[in-house]
Length: 225
Image (cartoon, rainbow, N blue to C red; front, side, top):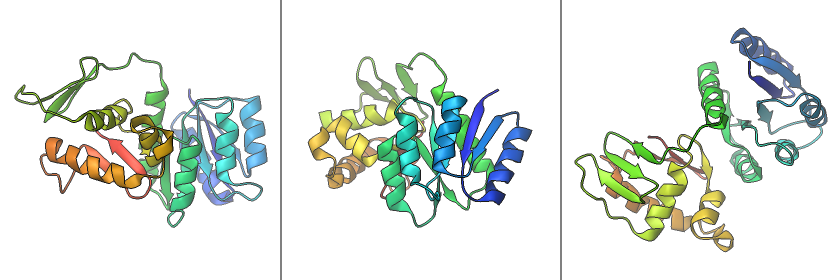
């Protein structure tokens, strides 16, 4: 039974999440503010945390930083629709994903299941196969469904590799820039747009309606195999 910590100051939402998650056999603890959330997590470490950004005593980003100081559990942000800057800040602080309020329960449950699957120990897949191409991370080779090589530039390969090593996970812009270009390029978001457009032209059946390389506007990118 996975333990989930719900951190939100909305009493009605917190209660609804506790009831619905418990009904699906999760062990749920709740906290209405950041201080009690960090205390609860310290006493009974969760397997996953849902953290609202708008808490009464501290910013939800500070809760993320507090958890990241000692644990690598998945952290999913619960965020108001207009709080894009807060989402980016939380992802840069170590959050794994976010769900925008108001959200559907089915969406949240799917995000929770995916995050717990990613957190479970398993050997890293050396090869990722989609309907249109195969990525061989070990051989650093990309082939089409017909088996022909798809040529990428070194930058394009590093971008694809960085995303493919975290399938279905949101990778923040700054994290991707650090991994591909280095920490001094953290704010050069234009680089991402240019090279991602090139990748889509080479990989996507319809680059204008991407299936594999998904943009979360202003926040980051997902690779969905």
